[in-house]
Every structure is written in structure tokens, then in C-alpha cells.
Amino acid sequence: GAVVSQHPSRVICKSGTSVKIECRSLDFQATTMFWYRQFPKQSLMLMATSNEGSKATYEQGVEKDKFLINHASLTLSTLTVTSAHPEDSSFYICSARVPNGRETQYFGPGTRLLVL
Amino acid sequence: SQKIEQNSEALNIQEGKTATLTCNYTNYSPAYLQWYRQDPGRGPVFLLLIRENEKEKRKERLKVTFDTTLKQSLFHITASQPADSATYLCALAPQGAGTALIFGKGTTLSVSS
Image (tube, rainbow over all chains, first blue to last red; front, side):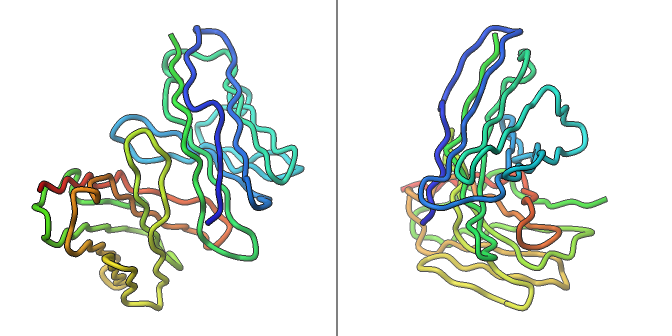
């Protein structure tokens, strides 16, 4: 099946710093990728839809200036958490849909962010 | 309001039994519904997709049913094994293919030997 990777898998940073998370589709091209956030014992919550070559579409309540998304190529989307605060600590997961009209989404392994 | 609910937060069963997980939704008309497995600290892994015109789908020991009248999907694991212990998520795409998924909170299944 299709493989999606994320880097880093785990990051600890100080409050006020910025953190970049990469999401790559390894064996297919993804025109659309999705970024989710998951708090403990909660469901995955969609943050934004990342479209290659255009601006991301953010869900209501997600600050686009705080969570910067760049989808510069068909295999790479990045999420930058700017000026991170402890409440941004969470599990960030990206997904990509295999093209050709398939509905299945393939998820990355997730990135655990801890802001001290 | 729109909701997708997985009724049980946790389900404990003995090895060899059939696990049945429930997913209910309201105020959606999904073209299909998906089930994922998520292990602790990992991303979800796709298991099965069932379309609105399909009553049942099987894959090895897994079976999914979809009742659009009841707005419910049931997920069954037969002959369960300790390795099946994980959190199972149901998800739907409210606007069809190409759109993001809306997830339930998940049911954590524990299979004891």
C-alpha cells in the first residue's frame, strides 16, 4: 500500500519557538494532504487541507498564522507551529489520498510535540 | 448538529470471541464509511471501506455492515486475538471522495488470552 512518512516522530521544544513537521508521500504523488491533531483519548481533528501549489484551507478555529502549511511539491507538505505554547502540545498526523479517485487515505505515523 | 459517535470507549473480550464495535452518525449522508486501526503513538491504518449501497464487506476476520436507515455501521472481528488489541476508529467523508475525514473518538479493544 501507499506509504506516508513524517519527520520528526517526536519533538520537545521551549515555549515561543517554532517547530516544523514534514509529511512525505514516499511512493505516490499527493495533490492533497490533510493535517490532523489528536489530543489524548480524543478523536483526530482536522486542522487544514493542504493543496499542492495553492494556499491551505483551514478549519474553523485553527489559526492560519500560527499553523503555517506549505505544500511545495506533490510529495511534501510541511506544518510549522509558530511561537509554540504548552497548549499546542499534541499528536500531529498527516494523511494523503492516493490519486485516481480512490477514497482511501493513508496516514503518516504521527509527530508527538511537547512544548515546555 | 453533525455527530459521529462510537458508543463504547472501551471493550474487553476474551481471545477467540467476536468483538463488535458500533459507529453511529447523525446529520450526515456519507457516500461511504471507513474503519481504521490505531495503535498507541501511531497514525491510523486503513482497514475497510463500505459504500452506502453495500450492506456488508468482509476482509479475512473482519466484517463491516452499513445501515443507512439506522445511520449505523458495525465492525466485527471474529476469532479475536490479543494482537487485535488496539483502538478502532470509524470515519466518514461528509462530502465524498477527496475530502477530509471526520473521525469518531474510537473504541479501545482489549483481547485477553
